[in-house]
Length: 222
Image 1 (cartoon, rainbow, N blue to C red):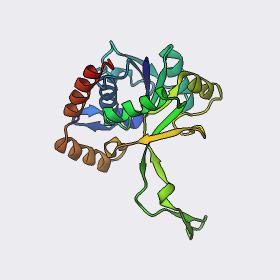
Image 2: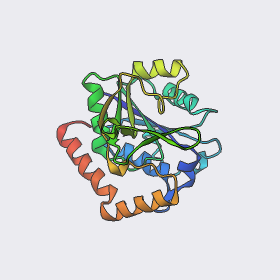
Image 3: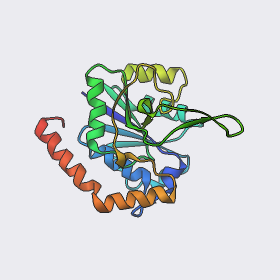
Image 4: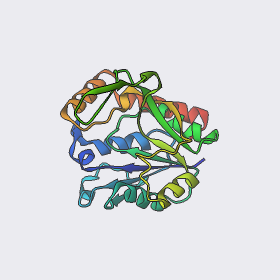
């Protein structure tokens, strides 16, 4: 089964750094070292190609972003070539565990056409009107926060791109879910980066990736 990842980097993923590297560089490394992704197509803002020195070019292709994210995903998809599973990943989530990536791929291999990693909502969620008055309380037992990478079959993503829809924000009604992970938080603010730095100090990502790579080799997934 050939798996290709489309990594979409907005300006923040290029500008924000963790341990001296842009967030998107960590995201690229996470995908290429996961032992289950054959190729990565990286989309970066126009003019940012010069910042991608950390990208291992033997496993990646770098493209400039289009005017919209939907068009950027379509551009990356057209450059990806034939494959069985396409992962669409937000570069602002650089520390997704390899086990989560594999869970998305496994769900596609078991018959799903679209898959999203999710985590339960733990806060109380209120509905408010235009003036800010609380009108209702949502049942959080049925609420989930969506992470990435999202997984698609090649045919499913082709159809989404043909409709001009952004696959990162408009999942099909038939999309299945797998368990996400707290480490897959989105890094957009200094507070987010501080949390990521603290997580790395407690549980280095490199160790997680090396363990996953050993498991993948043993199971024959490479």
